[in-house]
Length: 348
Image 1: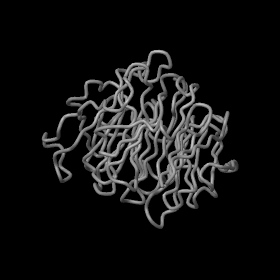
Image 2 (image 1 turned 90 degrees about the horizontal axis):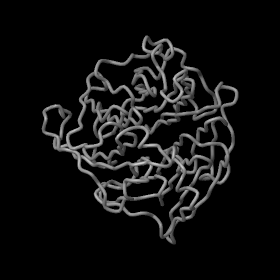
Image 3 (image 1 turned 135 degrees about the vertical axis):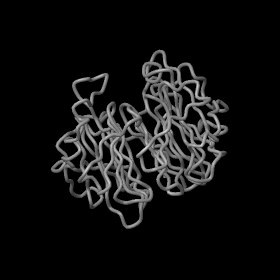
């Protein structure tokens, strides 16, 4: 059984597979869902951050939701939520606009503000271009191998990290991605960070101390948003790309693509120049023009399986991103979604 949750502009869509097909449920109408994560220990449980209506939790795969965190999270504009995938770890984090980070050590029952993040030197330059007077936490990545390592991407401004769960922070380093939209770690490749950013694609093999920009073959390398890594093979990566922010997000003149890349090395030294170029993926995906940039996710339990959501629908690949199929036979995609911008995607 697979569970897909897609945050759209005005509601959250939940798709659940069964032997007879997919069932669809719509919830959190008018709350403006912005980010979503599914608890790896309990697929019935998920957390959804909304822009304007705080943080919500479900225990029944999205059938019902309860507002949580009112006493601990001071802001209602939740822009990122992440939960640890490591065994025996109960940590989860929430980021907001304006930029503030909160940590829970008990799966969302109570919250603590991580004040040290806002004391970093680079914080004076954090500014989100559409709303330059503010900034927000775009992505929180909890390391897949080390329970104390936390990475936070500020859009746009910095990629910073903590090695003690968020009490002390390390500021951005030289030649780091400036505008990370999605950051991924992989349990089979400790130390490697994958970044899809507004300034291209980057990888680090030393926990973010040094970075390499890898864009060979990536014709649309000016603006990347979605990123997913094969759960069974850390060398297989897919990204969504566009010529710029306007083309990526425009509801009237969008144009976006999906690219795939396989690293040709087995170890952590991908800086030897032997990695393969990016290749454009098109089989089974909608035409680029009119397609808002895709949100991507890997199935954490099935190697080689990826999902993508955009304004055209939900798409699935079962061959590591080479070809795709729209889930149109089982999932109805209402016409009003054709002009909506997907915000987040989670798969369990």
